[in-house]
Image (cartoon, rainbow, N blue to C red; front, side, top):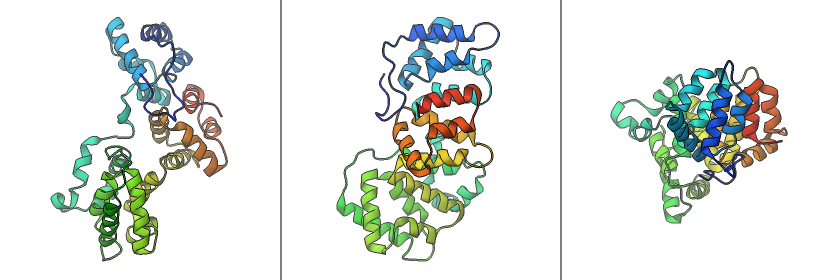
Length: 296
């Protein structure tokens, strides 16, 4: 029942009782109109494991699916957040696992380059898959194999800087499979071999959306909280809000590393994530996001 990570703003609710929570949710949905505050109080303050228990208890006592019922009761961004909270963990950072294994064998089978796919994919799905590949589906250990790190760095160097035309797939394979500690070592070795940071090489060797994806990947490896802080900032700055990105990150990281993301956000932008969300959203949508954000 515990939280997935230990740096989240959402932690295990003590004295948890799924049946009582179901009662509160049913009350909140009774009659005309919905009590959004009551829904927020329950759902935004429970871990993913606890919400799964609530879903089971709801099914048993009401005979219907909680997500379906809430889906028909609610609307807009508030509804998206609530439904996001009811999903199982990996769905958010891992939008479409089906593409994962294929992305590495791209050139071979399709005669299309990775670039065609990333850039031709206007929905950005493929970019998300690449980025999510790097936040999930990798070796989660922290063992560093020094000799292998040197080989990996050479591989990347030979795929890119050392010859014309960049073999992105070779690059992606190393980035996708190795654990974070190992990759940081690879980046150090790469600098020794090539005389420049891996980010510089990516900028020299790639362009457009492919460059963006690879830079995002490296950024994510160097610091996941900084990576998510930047995504959150970009989702809110300027005109309009990219709600889908804002929702996905707030829901997905709430019980993993939201505390670190908030600290990075403050460091990078001089304002709190809380104040940004507050100024950019409204109503119950704002309230539930601020609940996931956890105080200033």
